[in-house]
Amino acid sequence: LKPFWLKPFWRKSHSRGGWQRIRHEAAAMSFSYSPSFFQHFPKYHAPHLKPGQEHTDPLDTLKPQCLVHCSSWLSEYNQCVTRISMRTDGKGDCKGQFEELTMCQDHCIAHEIFGHMK
Image (cartoon, rainbow, N blue to C red; front, side, top):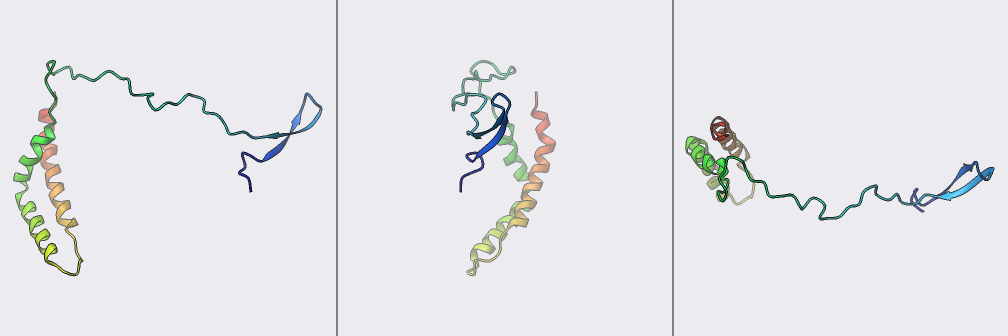
């Protein structure tokens, strides 16, 4: 069984005055693709930084600060992890506690992150 693009089909030929049997060929791409197509952009340099100065991600500083703010959720998550690790049947998880911890951390970061925008 051939794929449909390799099966022959018939079409009306106006130049020959009758039906002509033709084959579909696999369509060629309309543009040339090479793996290095988008790899030659110049390196971006943020305009507010001095030359040689590295950009620092404010999330790297805010995440630990917000974990201190969410210490109650962190302790609840850690207690759950110790409880689950002591179980021998392999059941249970701490998804709920982890979600509460990350929601608290995200809420804290959302209030602080725009103070770092320039």
